[in-house]
Length: 223
Ligand SMILES: Nc1ncnc2c1ncn2[C@@H]1O[C@H](COP(=O)(O)OP(=O)(O)OP(=O)(O)O)[C@@H](O)[C@H]1O
Ligand SMILES: [Mg+2]
Picture 1 (cartoon, rainbow, N blue to C red):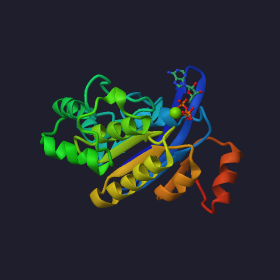
Picture 2 (picture 1 turned 180 degrees about the vertical axis):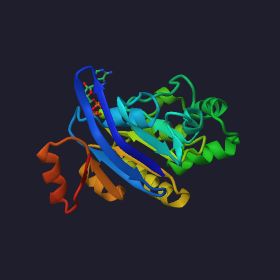
Picture 3 (picture 1 turned 120 degrees about the vertical axis):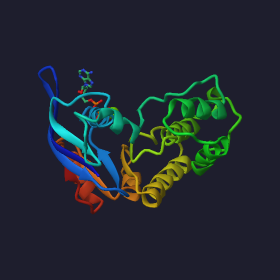
Picture 4 (picture 1 turned 135 degrees about the vertical axis):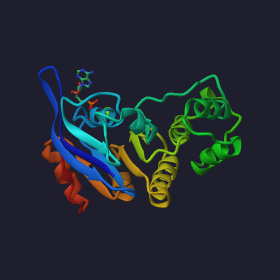
């Protein structure tokens, strides 16, 4: 379980996140929405241990972010808004490279299976020749190599076609359910968020978002 209590983040005088408290249970997919600049990526970076909150506490499976950071990092998978892959390497070489860096031993067959679970069947293609959607899928596959409990994805479906978006969405929901993973992901596509997520958190107080979400018949939980 992920438990966030009274989390705030300021950059200088600029207060971005104000006193957020929420929790996520194993098996849940959480959609994080809000206008550009609301603080979605900021929150994901804090949850990924890449930046510190100004105040507040975060616990993952009863381990505190303040005292058990090494343990926690092994339990987290993070895919940033920008793609982070070796462009000159093939899909296979990327998977093997990141497997060596991870804390897990996986066979090539298992790595290949992770890619085909994502409907990415381009094992021997060079990454620079893949489409944007395929690179996203590969980035997600890489983030799963060490079997994290908490998967954080910043706009994994931005700028990719409907078919790949659906494939990624249904993969994420089945992954959460089948392996009891906690998934938090951001997207600006409300239809997709409604389909994939068990719960929705809305950051910021822009009434526009609240109205849109209510028009979908879903009350967002406000952060
Ligand atoms: N390192 C930083 N220093 C100062 N301000 C920052 C820094 N990183 C982010 N910000 C500011 O924090 C605010 C939140 O940014 P963030 O990237 O978290 O928003 P977002 O909700 O992810 O937006 P988007 O939908 O555009 O991705 C923005 O006003 C941004 O300018
Ligand atoms: Mg962002």
